[in-house]
Image 1 (spheres, helix red, strand yellow):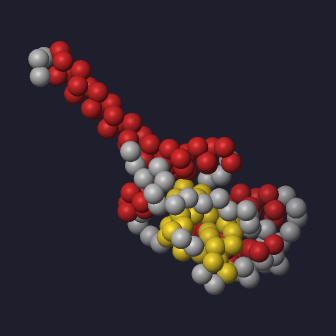
Image 2 (tube, one colour):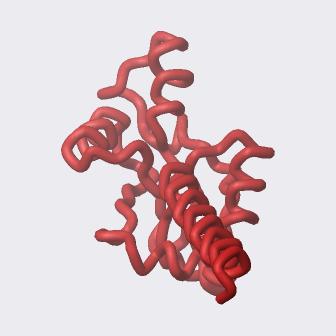
Amino acid sequence: MTFVSDLLETKQREPLSITLDTSVYDALRVLADTNVGALLVLDGAKLVGIFSERDYARKIGLEGKFSNDTLVKDVMSSEVMFVRPEQTIEECMALMTSKDIRYLPVLEEEALVGLISIGDVVRAVIADKNIEIQQLENYVTGLLYGG
């Protein structure tokens, strides 16, 4: 069983963040330059939202707003679901599926310690399932060949 803390150990970088007063254009530039799909929005050290490509598409593109003239605080997702390091990836998968979200900040106490994506979770679930399959194959082989 894989936990969020295990997943964070495999991540290469700290989660990227922006402030409430960052322009949407500047946030898009960070997304493009770093090849990520979402940025955490911080007010000081406090997590107050997430800005994602989905927010841009739905709240800028479809509403006829302009990225240079709009601040992240006006279009970010402010109801932020999060997980704790001790939670399992299965719990993350269930939360992401039920809430239709692609990114989960990881908080320990009130401190931000990471960000996981649906891709991170799916890769971890597949790895766990592959290990289970290998263990079952070894067990069955042992039964068949007297091990």
